[in-house]
Image (cartoon, rainbow, N blue to C red; front, side, top):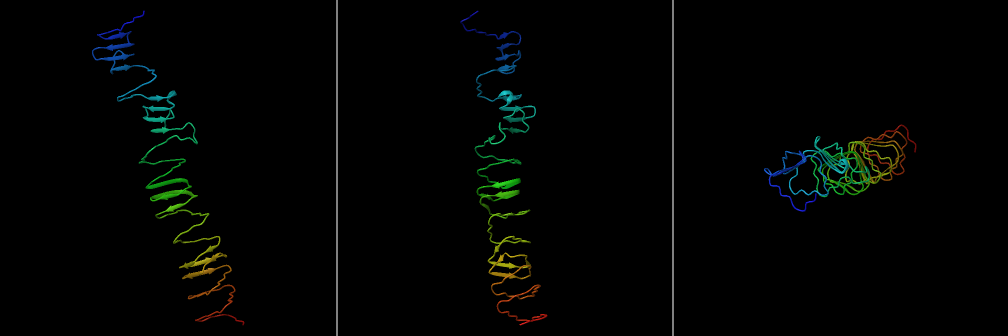
Length: 267
């Protein structure tokens, strides 16, 4: 039957027992329900091309976007949100469709973290941090400036590194290139190659096992042990006690202002 006129129902409308109910008294419509609690109360699924909500929306069950929530999923039972996954394992679980080489999370603006941040790999254009703790290998390609405390287990710097405060290294410091510093204090200093030193001052002891120390001025206030071949091209001043266990060749003059003791002399 075709009807080309509008229907006006003044006292409510009921289709079947629980299919459609329009209550004129409380002005509520129920679909699949005979006791609607909202203006439009739907018991069951809703299929819609577009949904526009201009007011506040409250969802009491899970929210799924995409096939079975594969794009966006809200787990009401465990109170977790998944982006790119329908099985979130964290409060906010963001997963990329490809594990490597694809950006899964992009933040345009500031981001503030009050807790820990655990990362497998990270690429940052600019970072300002008060304290930075890195437990794995860190590689800095460009200019890196750390004004606060930074803790690293392993660090590789292929570019320029600037430390404006103190730098504490609990393990070894390996430098494959040149190192320039104003002043250094250490317990032991091992140099396996050639060392050119302008002025070398030793307060305790100096041990040289091979060749490789070249300096215009060498000041030693403690004990010096030279185990290899040593050549002095200029004057040598000894104000304390000196012991020579091997041969001593003096090509110039030998001036002794105090006593000299020897077993045998030939001249």
